[in-house]
View 1 (cartoon, rainbow, N blue to C red):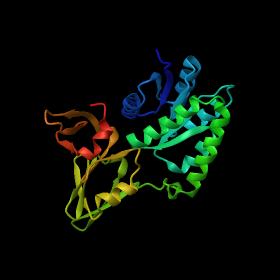
View 2 (view 1 turned 180 degrees about the vertical axis):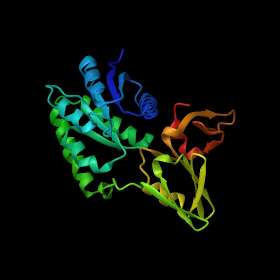
View 3 (view 1 turned 30 degrees about the vertical axis):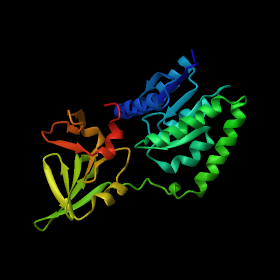
View 4 (view 1 turned 180 degrees about the horizontal axis):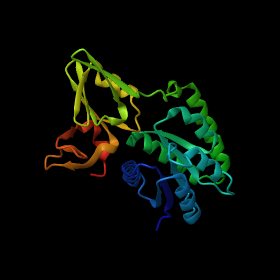
Length: 262
């Protein structure tokens, strides 16, 4: 019987924890996910209880965040391999300095996760894991510094201006349920209110926080915490149902990976 690797996942979003769990079990069948934490304190407690070999840490968690957790874990004699999973790529440098073997951006992609798993497996098979990890980190750190992906991404859209009948409405992005592209315009749905704005759905995607909003179709972006449930029909079509709303939103095949557990 092959040796199984214990893993802990820490993320404050239940749907994202489930998504990562299902993806990991698909690309790395030899793991045992021994615990899932909703915050930093739970992550530390699970790590102490189960001594996992690998911990996947979300950075932006309430209370103790992923960076603070990683610093505490690094004080252990045999710290686990840590992977930061987050939407905020300005944390990349700090993540690597704090012993993270890799850095994944949300929404997760299977191909990228497979590469991370391969790196972890290589480290685990090394006779000198700590030295090998440091060497690997230095190499990846150099790659990151040369990458254009290190541009700060914390200036996400907070307000949307929408004009209607000589009035300008200020829409709080946190109140938006979803966006639908409509020819040259985009329809913004926030509660019972709908507004049209002259902004393309692609441009909006680049301005919205990727940890909060997911693109599910070429013409649709949805706020993740408005999702009530997801269903799939007999033909394999996937649909999202929102909390407190009657309409359903179609998920194109390109974005089915966001709900891979189905």
